[in-house]
Length: 69
Image (cartoon, rainbow, N blue to C red; front, side):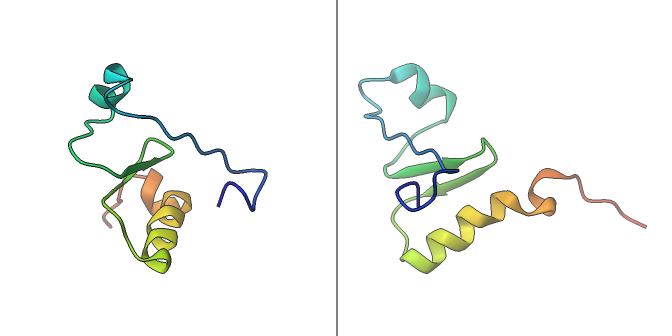
């Protein structure tokens, strides 16, 4: 997605070379994708499922607490 959209930044790191990042994001398996520090995607997914989960970081529900009436 970062190749297609200049508004998206993607960084790939080797967890064993960056143990502080691995601890910060609790990497226990790879691949692990973290979107906006909110959505975590663990493992390889089919492209459509990956896009759906990635875009869920943009939804208001992902960043706002749930209000009960």
